[in-house]
Amino acid sequence: MLISIIMPVYNNETYFPMAVESILMQGYPDFELIIIDDGSTDGTPAIADEMAKRDGRIRVIHQENQWIYASFNRGIEEAKGEYIYILNSDDRLRKGSLKRMADSAGKYRPDIVWTIVLTHVCDEKQDLLICNKGRADRHVKEEAYYPDEREVRKYWPYFYGSLLAHNQANLYRSEIMKKHRFRNDVYGADTLFNISIAPDVKSALILKEPVYDYLIYQQPSMNASVGKYYPYEHDMFNEIYVRYKSMFQGWGLPEESYREVLGNFRLRQVSMEIRSLSATNCPMTSSEKLKHILCKVPDAVVSACAQSDHREEELESRILSGMRELLLRESIEETDEMYFAYELLDSLLRYEKEEEDYRKIERAIRHPSNPMHIGQIFYNQLKGNG
Image (cartoon, rainbow, N blue to C red; front, side, top):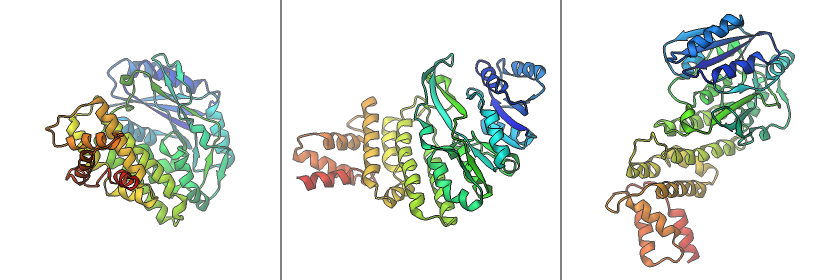
């Protein structure tokens, strides 16, 4: 069975040879490696061309810089294999993984083989500092095969909840991949791609043994996307939530099979959104950040998500905690229109409250820049206890 491995690379002369080596050392010969050089200006193009001269299974395609998901699409167009796997140029394929995937695909012939991605923190030499951060493998207890559309759709909330459907690091049947394209405008295009292909997937297999090592580098500047602010992030998370909910409803799945899974991720993403406002590339002032947190984050989609599972208190807690983290790092002037947010936190957290504290909380809850009345739930609890 020929497997096409796609590796996009941009200005990564240091690490991408190691990623290529992790493929060449697999011990499974029937693959083609398509390296998409996305307009690199360092030594990457020359190194890639030299690799292709030494091994006929390697093809190199040079293109103008278009970003990573456009490189995915170009590689998929060029792929000749029955199945396709994508490996980023600063990550690694675990030893023996290619043969394991090929053997399993040959046995079951599924439309997709879900594979576990392990996340590690490493230094600039790729020496691991923290292994298996987040323990993604804990969600998968055993290998499982889902032979038909009914089973695939029934268990898709599990595929999403166990992190398998969050990325592109899976073995896809080529004919399905070629029917769809990755979007090239958001970093979560891999999650959105899996939503797009879901209606076409008629069989699936989960491999229990982890396949992919995803490396987060200790120096934030060395990571392509980790620790950065993206202005579209809130809308992207909402789109993922809404599309999944609509898809599951359209499939006729019982709400209890997916409500908690979707809610868990969307509410955790609230904290991620707020934390990203502290990234060095975020152009907002402290006042603008607070306004974004109170006016943009708890919008109709997020609020409805919390209400559907009776998690309004969790949402409010995440927003208040996020504002507190922000104000521990940044200050805001008393004359600023958003100073009420500081007063809200200060008064809520004050152990012995005076009448003025209660007045400040009430003013903050009713403030026009707090349209969802964040703080109301905890204020009601305070008044109830009083």
